[in-house]
Image 1 (cartoon, helix red, strand yellow):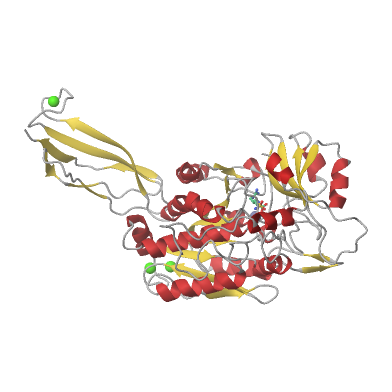
Image 2 (cartoon, helix red, strand yellow):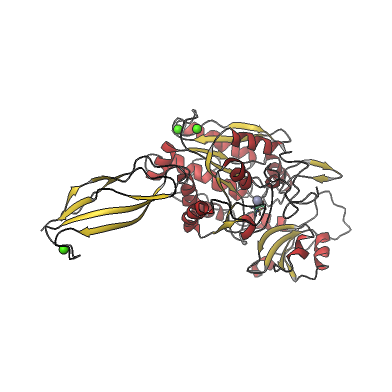
Length: 498
Ligand code: 0X9
Ligand code: CA
Ligand code: CA
Ligand code: ZN
Ligand code: CA
């Protein structure tokens, strides 16, 4: 896994060349255990991935920070020199091939997966794509609206996907946001892909049709437009490593980590959240100090989200509250039930962010969960090889890998009936063999794995076999409360014909 990185290594610039741009940053793998973790975290470095079970951390450092790391005595290895250039060259050498047949967004300009930044949509293109979606599907998606401006005055767009999309109806509301962190564009691509699935499959795929008709799906593709645009300006071909917003903190330091600025247990402690403006995890001067987070909290407070994904990259994790402390939320059984169904799709590791990854306060899901009771997760899309700017050919496959996981998250935002088992009983001679002319009764064990009660659950028995006669095609199993089980009270029935 390390070898391909070494092949692409590029030499660092000589130290005495005056720089107009930010110093190069390198990807370093560090061997770290729970016992030695403090030696790493005390340096307040940019930790992109941490896996204490595997004693493995992936840390992004400047030359200066690399020297600090050396003083800790922790085993470490530089695996990619100048990570931004590595990503840019990887994107340039893999110019994609246009969307695969049967994929979504081939009709967009530019087509999905062919955006202007190494395949990723630029900020302007995101706005244009939202306009194109509205123009093509005016009955399924609202016109884009701004929830407020970023620090530098850029609108933060949101859209609603639903039937009657221009009306705020009384349907369960769910939210998908992305690009809190400016260097994580694959999250935005996954978000747009899910939107395209809903729009293009409406009327043909039963799940897409059900979700559009029975949910309000709010999508915020870019929470951090200033940081994302800054990355485009610095690295027009993609690969930019800027993470925070562009707040001028004074003293030559820029940026607040928007995923540390939410006003729930903000600044609880210094674990994974920093008071140092130079840090990549700088939490800001006060809770919700940043206009982007003020816009998000106002938007969130104005609705009632049942479930939410705040999409990040990378690590193949599906992270739940709590973030601020190593604790399970009181309704962990609900998180665990939905999380298991969702991660059965993509094989991602599910658990509280503080336990699976690291503690951090002021994060989105703690605010959603603690302030509003929303079941909220942060997926970390993609592997270490994918990194922050996966190859262009990975844009669609990573989106496809997570499509059904997003669908299930939206389903869980309302009543979501999942079949658990079916009991089939021989009610003829009762010997357990199904014989000619015998009546057979069926009872379905059902689970509502959603956050909303199912007021009616109707079952219909059909068969295309000429050897069966359906004698009782209808039964009712409703209502079934949220996170509860049920079954049809009266059985469905059929007979076996000669
Ligand atoms: O640190 C973050 O904000 C997220 N990881 S990322 O690499 N995308 O920056 C994870 C936040 C999840 N919350 C906690 N681990 N507490
Ligand atoms: Ca609607
Ligand atoms: Ca509504
Ligand atoms: Zn992130
Ligand atoms: Ca029998």
